[in-house]
Image (cartoon, rainbow, N blue to C red; front, side, top):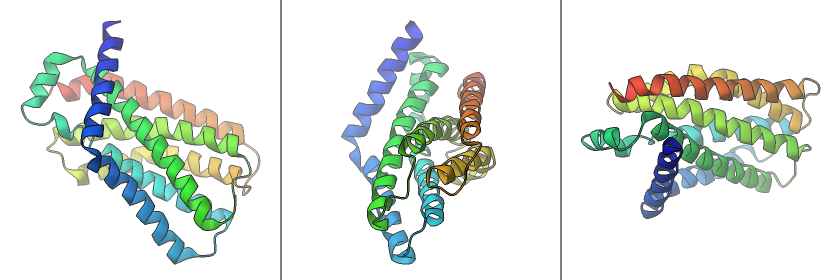
Length: 219
């Protein structure tokens, strides 16, 4: 119960801090809007294949930008304060929940903007696509949050985060792209296996993060 209370307090602190410094979240949302506008100017003629591919590209980079700043506020002496304030597991889970919420927001905004610019609804299976987005948001958050912690403890190098996260996230992206392909009518069959494997990757990523994060945080 003490850990759950710590998670709740830290998650609420994340929300309040973000609300006070809205420029950080605003920059991420501005990135999504600007990217989709540039895509519209460049593509003009959308198809189910281009819609699916461009959606996951926007989501991946938006999630990377949003998660990359997860542990920037805990740098320097503040790290020692958090070290005594809460357990590493509580800190990681609170960051994971917050990043998941932001990635879901980016997913919804990207879907709405791309559908608006495409002037056509390419998603024929909205319930399936929504479930893929929810699972994808959890998996992206779990992987990117832990990698952001490693990069922050190594000096906050953004290049390091990009190098570490990309190979780890490829299996999940492969499943999400295929799930999106089914949702827009490009593929058929094995649609349930995409989601089940995404659930497995989500659980594996969260388990590995919870096991390894205390060693990273206390280093």
